[in-house]
Length: 182
Ligand SMILES: C[S@@+](CC[C@H](N)C(=O)[O-])C[C@H]1O[C@@H](n2cnc3c(N)ncnc32)[C@H](O)[C@@H]1O
Image (cartoon, rainbow, N blue to C red; front, side):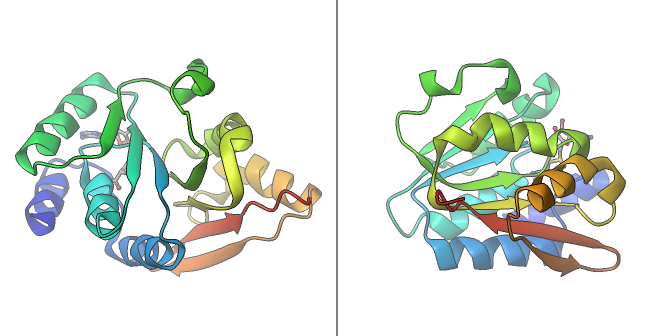
């Protein structure tokens, strides 16, 4: 089903996660074994499916956000096609809502794959809801470094250590972990 959905995304020009980034996402999920995962933007459900596929071995929940209504509708269609559970999908921009109203538990894995210039805004919006040791993974931060420079500046100024995993040919995924002792 992943192959079918990837091919469909390629045909329809949907910017889904690259295969190399997909492997990084899987590896990080397997190593963290998170229980409460948040994904910012869903697009048509591909990376949601990857997350579901990986974390469904244990007790978990995925909350995913998609801002575009047509994309959200495609995602919901795929959600029903692939018969998944423990997932909450919102057609809303999380920057515009009171997150405390929808999250009753702390988040331990945040995957940001959205508009690069808003990466820092997303992180700051979710910051208080992130558990200590929560993993934050942000895609496309090398190719579009200039668009996510506010995030780099924030991390550097706050001496927050981050890692960049290479995603060939010229991109990367950034990871950092929440340490409430900062
Ligand atoms: C980087 S993508 C998210 C990809 C997703 N995390 C994945 O890897 O499957 C972000 C955006 O893709 C957008 N998008 C752009 N072109 C699209 C298209 N042709 N069909 C559906 N969604 C599209 C969505 O609105 C979404 O907000």
